[in-house]
Length: 431
Image (cartoon, rainbow, N blue to C red):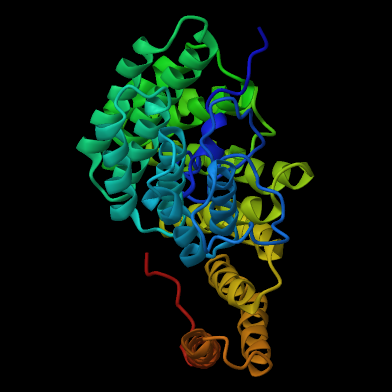
């Protein structure tokens, strides 16, 4: 039996990115091609619609119900939700429609509502389907999509109940459905872990991710589960455990799409564990090694490079480790050509130059900000310009003060030398 990418199977099954495996506060969802053996009516990418179905002014015939469902599904994919609902409602309202057509139309309608983000309506349609057709073979998939819908609505406890019901419902599958049973149970467990994670119960989420890691998964799914397990560890405070898991993940999956975020989590965990040099090394590895990974999403990589570098450099600067901060700022300066990124980083470098006794380099950095801001109108740099101007004035004041103090010292020293020359010579002591 060929193993299919089990968890990725349901990325397509979710109209709203239900198995969008990136963290949502966490970033972006991930989609890949997947097997479609247990897909719902809308999960197969529809062909480009070129024409409407046959006239629907009269009552549709048996074959026309299938055409209406297919046409409604295509319209939903195109974003024509009003047209999709009209087509699907014709099937649902037709007395001559077969039960199988009504069930397919209901699932398509619920899927359409999810695409439209009408989640309350979608949940109501799924509930109707479960109530009216509780013995249908597509109940497990309907339960999965209902759970995802409820989770999107913030009803995490109800979502968990539906996902657990998926596992129970698979026990009623007909014999010979082992592969489908395995796919459904693994996906349900993943959705349970995701729901615990999203609800903030990172301990329970971590337990489910670890259990999933013991199962026979496609390599992409195994990498994803390991990453989320490490993420859950860090969020519930097991920093040492997160460091171990993250290093294992990066060792096994250095080219994974979540490797940049994993390096960010590793660097911040090490900093929170008061292991600054390891955090510094992890940051430089992200800034330098990731540039050679052509397979990674450049925008995604740049985002985590900027976030990690800026956060760690600021932490080093505030802790007084100015040299390490300066090295990181220098590395991240070239990550973007946008003034909104380069000029604030240049300002931080100017502060580092001041702290390390390089006033001329600091002055050049602040002046560069003022010169660049003149050609970057509307970039929201007014506050930065004000601060750079103040730093330049401060440097000028400090130079003037230093010169004045130096002059006074020289003048005072000269007086002392002159006074010393008029003093009477010491006489020999009287025996």
